[in-house]
Length: 82
Ligand SMILES: [Zn+2]
Image (cartoon, rainbow, N blue to C red; front, side):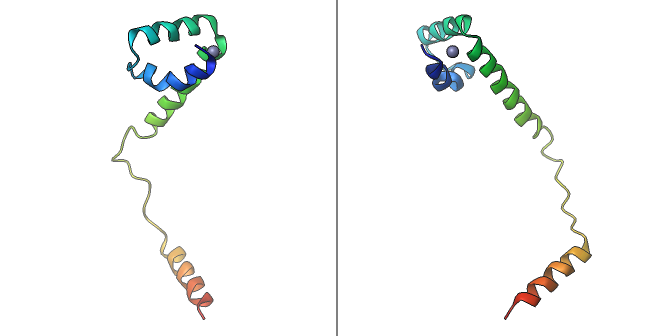
């Protein structure tokens, strides 16, 4: 298994979808390749950050737009109309 193969099978490995033979070869590569171990650590950290961003789906971003801003946008729109 090459580093490119590790990248290709990474998601299946992390989701435990590799068959046992591929999983063993995958893990053997990781025992020999510090770069892939580091890559997977960064990948997992990025996934964790992505999940953390959606921890509270009820917490909407603010949807209140200042009325002055709405008026300014509409005025600019009206000014550019022919
Ligand atoms: Zn590698």
